[in-house]
Length: 213
Image 1: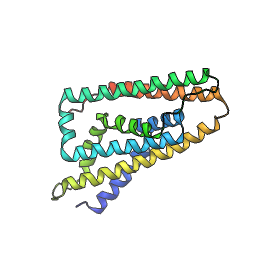
Image 2: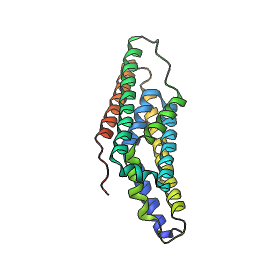
Image 3: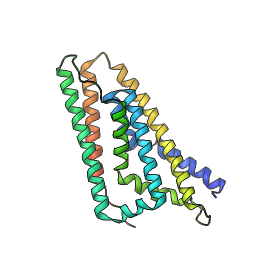
Image 4: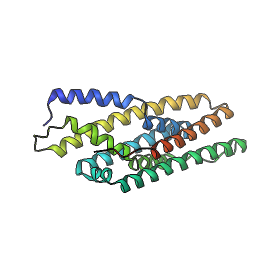
């Protein structure tokens, strides 16, 4: 199994990567500013489940097949990018409609939908699969009879760190949103900004290139 020193290095590296601002953190912050702390936490948990999907797929070799196929990689990233852009557009549109309705705002998206969106956004992001396949094998003891198990354990640890970091971001962004609760114009700006962030994340995913073996 894993060498204790190698595992310690992995934990440290995975932690640093988890707290480094990236698309996942920006997405959770955007969802929190748009729908509140509960939706942000739900999005974090959804992202975590989506991350576990990629870990299992990577351990079973499915991710390698997707990344090796230009067609599958492109199809997955286009669907994921369009979904992000659609959510961003919807967020901006609702922010403006709610502001113009003078208090008769539409109900929030809700935690279940935020959770589902988080799962779908992460599952449809081939860059996540590429990350796990590039990062985790460096710490796997290939001489062991439990290579797949090692991959799954290391992947689960990475996902746990990422999810915890996302939840911390959700709480921080939630406090910012709560502080602006009495200022409808600021809330509108925050929601529009979060929608714009989702659109930019979608565009960034659309421009992602397939890793070269």
